[in-house]
Amino acid sequence: CGLPGRMAHAVAEAAHESADCEVLGHSLTGPGMDSSMRVGGREVLLYAPNRRAAFLEALRKEGPAIVIDYTHPDSVVDNARFYVENHLPFVMGTTGGDRGVLAKLVAEKNHPAVIAPNMALPIVAITAMLEWGSKNFPGVFRSYQLKVKESHQIGKADTSGTARALIALFQTLGAEYQEENLELCRDPEAQRAEWGIPEEHLAGHAYHTYSLDNAAYGANFRLDHNILGRRIYAEGTLEAVRTLEHEAQ
Image 1 (cartoon, one colour):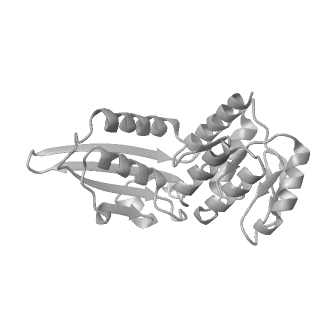
Image 2: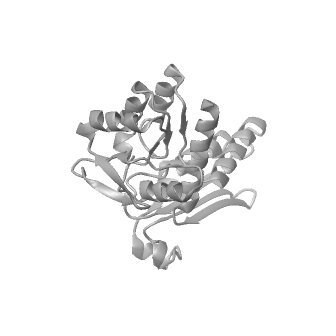
C-alpha cells in the first residue's frame, strides 16, 4: 500500500523480482490518486481511502495476504487500525504517526505485524546493538553532547524515524541532547555541494551522522550510516514479510 509512491514502488518491484513473493493487484493509495499502475507487467488497482471496503473485498478474493505499508505519516495509525480490525498481517515501513498507539493496537489484539522506523537490516542490527549497550553500559556517554545531521530527498514529509530512534538510545546511554542539535537537509543544492550526494540519488538517499562530543575529555565519537537509493530498504522489507509468513506457519 502506498503506490504509486517511490518506496512502495521499490518494494513492489523487488517483490516481483523475488522467487518467493507475489505482488497482488490491489493497493491503498492517497486521496485523488484512485486509478491503476503496472508493476512488473501486472496491473495494480489503486484504491483511495474512501474505497477501503472495495479494496478489502478485492484482496480477500486473492487469498491470504501480507500488507506492506509505505503510505504517509498522517495515515499510519488509521491504516494500522484498519489492518488490525480486518485481520491483515502487515509490515509498517512508513515512519511517523504515534508509535505508542501503533504498538498498543498490535499488542491488544496480538496481531502479527512488523513495525520499524528503518527496514535496512544492518541499521536494524546497529539499533539492536545500541539497545543492548543501553542496558549493559548505562551512562557511558554521560556529559557528552549529541548532535545529529540527516539528509533525505526533498519529498520526505517527516523527520527521520531512524534518527529519532537512535537519539533516544544515545540519551539512554547518557548523552545530552537538545532539539536544536538536530540538523535536517532537504535542499538538493546543499546536498550536492555540502553533502557530496551524487546527482542520480538526490531523489532517494538517507545520510545520517551522530556526533558525540566531550570538550573536557577532548573526545569525539561519531556514527555514520549513508545509503543511496531504496533497494536496501526494499530487500529488508521482504525479509520482514518472510518473517511474518514463517511465524504464521
